[in-house]
Image (cartoon, rainbow, N blue to C red; front, top):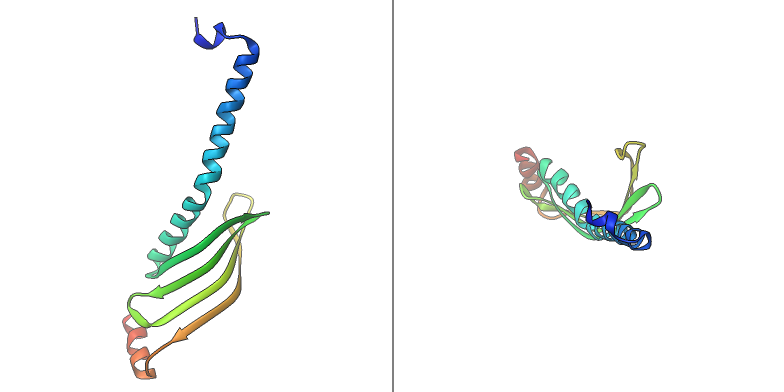
Length: 120
């Protein structure tokens, strides 16, 4: 005999609801770190370093706020994005990307920046 079959029906329902609530809470709390890790690994594959201020879920997508991008091989280039929306497709693939408030800062002379770009 099972331990659950010996319990009253109401207790089994409460235990099931508690387990579902626990799993839902864990998924909500881990959403931000999972999105950050996916975004940082995608940036690292392209030779970039990325820092993300906030991660918010939205209807059909994810909002990333206060992003800072740097290229280690190009220290004279920095980018800041106020907000970035990533829209999801039917299979949770990327369907679209929208930038809001993007700024790129270049420091150094044009020859130095050209050499850094050639090295990149």
